[in-house]
Image: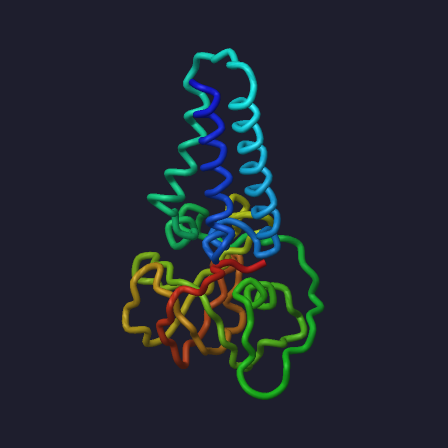
Length: 227
């Protein structure tokens, strides 16, 4: 492969990083705090490729190396430009198994804010349902936002939690009980309801049940993950 072709491929790769970091596309893959890392990496790759291209043009002809490996750099560029993979959803949750991941957690939680329904991340709701001995969710109406996962006739609300990127995503699921109008998988819902106490048991895969008082479909949020 010609050296100038390799440099152009690097420019395209760096440009692809800049492209996804320029809007909310990068949130499908990494945490919001990683945006500046992507912008910096993209700018450095483009800058180095341009400098190398100009240097080769100004200097004597360089020895050309045979091989097709550099063309692999084109693969992520084409994926981002032509396919733009969506954020992980119901299919990823289904492959993760039927139980919520349970890690040792504290049984001490901050009090929920007083007043109306408490809006909680799905992961926090699950952790409180499993570990909270103080009963902070007892009889308390909450609002959860997530996407639908179907397991036979059961309808679950799920959200994926990431520490760094989508590769380490862990699902948290809540079983929805009530009139939901049979939503399709991956439909995003904003749900209001009350925990069915004692439902997050080992036999149930540590998946708490929520008695739904209202639910409405919403557009997918720009940032689909929890942290």
